[in-house]
Image (cartoon, rainbow, N blue to C red; front, side, top):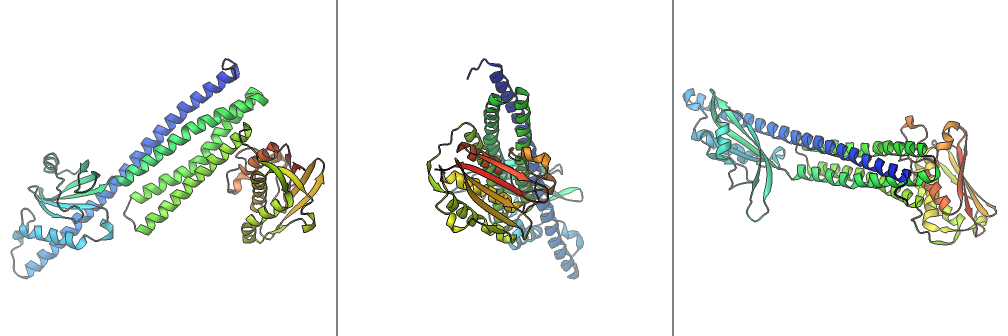
Length: 449
């Protein structure tokens, strides 16, 4: 590669500009995401603190009403420096310690002098009300803080705290302090940072690689247009799973949930992560095919047997839509020898079967024919699906291309691109014929033995 050529220079400049753009986008996304989950965590703390204060005041009001019935003077029921109020606060904490709403939340109650009068069981010996915080509270204002504490026998714990005064007659009656570990927030931020760290250079490298390959066989303007479309499509494909991950994390942080809810959310997050991985793996496979970097284990294969195995793998999907898959007669087996990589040939037909089942309505059929067409074996997969409009036929093997996007078809639009790459890697080809409403026929030509 001549690095002084205009083509190479333009590709390198494009990669650099793309990298800068993606870095800016990644930093912006990370900052927005971090601010969002921090705001959600603070809103949750404020909700918890206000709920605790209201609940304790309800306990105290109940005590006051019962005392009035017994003839006690109302004025004696001030919460400020009142030992009876301290007992009520302690009783509230003891009764509410196992409340599902407070799991994972540290609760501490202080009197107007900053003395701790009640605390939750999950932090029995550590007071986290500093003199600086106490001085701020005396002004009647709450304060959010991030603090580190050392628990006996364990690693330091990062906490996000809200210390909030509860007023009585314009004076601080008592102080509510709630805290939650920042582990989940930190983990979410680190996961996003790691994901961006992986995707950013990978996207730049893939774009540069594909641009270099295209520039060899197409005019420069077409190469630039295809790279631009590739980035837009890739960004669109990655945006959905990333948005789902971000949304689920935000919703999770709004309130405490059951272990089953957390498990369900983690499974959903894992599904979206697997989606991202599949997209990247497919793109890497296409890139390796483009650069002839995939070694093929060529050997003699029975095309009919491979097709039967591929059809068996998609039978479950076909049965769900009551679609019949018709295979060549058993007599054909053994008479259709081809030379190729078994795993890649199998992937090719799995993609074709999956595509046929996807676009065939319920009760339809998929038919497979095998014939010799020297020097090839010709395998045709015909479905009774929706068909392909003539204007879209030339683009059917393009990456990220989907027929009739308005229907919200599933998948990434890479299956047929991979099938075409596999056929061409075996010195063969793949063709398509279709009419709207009359199904489609994909024909694969693989050299016979």
